[in-house]
Length: 129
Image: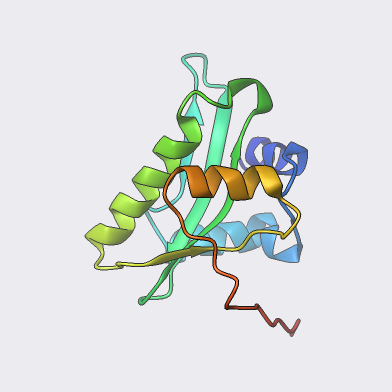
């Protein structure tokens, strides 16, 4: 299943993958954050969408929400996000963040359309270790 999801992420504009998305790293994330990441499939078992979600005990984080191009605007992304938020809330997480590229206009528009607030008061500073 990992290969199918990573292929979807690679084919989805606006998603940036790195070493943190290796099979081993994703498995570690899923073990550390059980029951917060989801896959949407059709009746035949074809993956239509996927989302990676987790939390640090204080805030939730959604990574790599993707829906196959030919299945967008059917509510799949919205349902995946809602399930993530429901699961986070069930573990007493009351705020969730996403990371999005500045030039991912389609992604920004999607998140705004489902009630998320774009913040320009924060910047992310990273270091590879």
